[in-house]
Image (spheres, each protein chain N blue to C red):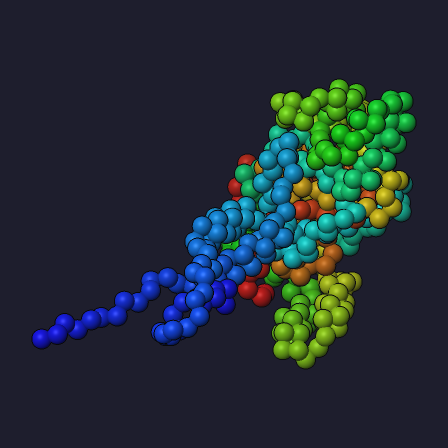
Length: 217
Length: 201
């Protein structure tokens, strides 16, 4: 204790005469006040959550077009990000090589782009995609190590006939749209995707889709 | 009848324990606090479920504001001193030691190189008055590319973090990405704020 007992201690008669003892108690109240004031200040100014980051790997730029990787038509979906938080997406016909009718969707996670991506991804890699949650569950129950889980998941995501997503944004899209769609790639366990420049033909597809307004999904 | 005397008890409470706790918390918060440097522009980053924390060292920040201006910043005082000298050599400009010192203390900045000299000569409180126009990053005059390149020459391990406002338009972002790719930076990070992950799919 920070206090020293002084005085009290019963009555002694005829004891030695001592000098009057001063109390050694200090009033702590102002110090505590100050302490809590400073705590309040620091608590309010501290931001505890550090910013998170998303890693992006772009392919090395190939100067001549022949060296560029060609995407197999049947396994790719092209997402065109446009204004008003809309996504126009289309598949390429495997036989003719022409784009099929573009469809419009949005970033809604219950009936927007997410169910579509999940469904398409599962269709192409049913065994792999369904086992990702199992691996994650096993890791949480400490049955496998983190490295092991990551290795398995990376193998599934790298499946060569799996879904490939080509992301193209037009001039009306915002940065948030891009981040949101990259987030969907993480959520839907899509390992292979690329951010590519939009072409003039695809701008026309967006105009076409906006004009015909096909039903969502 | 004799009066019953109630013994008076002291109302003093021992504050020592409370003081101890208060100062322990105070110490914790003082050490945990990092004061934000003065940013020339407020940026609201979009959120993502990504959980990778942003490293504190070896990082250069490219900020894209809502209206499409581009700002640059690099972590580490010693690197910034070297960086400004290298940029000075490239643009045949010499900086006084005071200006180099001022640059190394600067947080992110966004202006063409020729305006930087005058900006660094200003007093710190005068600098906040200056309206920064952003670093030119178009194909005609791409100073951002020089900053990125010289920053990589200054510090080999540097990583690029892009901090964009959610409402900035995609073409500006695409221009920055293209600049980075031209300078052979194919790996970079988007700074986002945290968001809870959806239930497992």
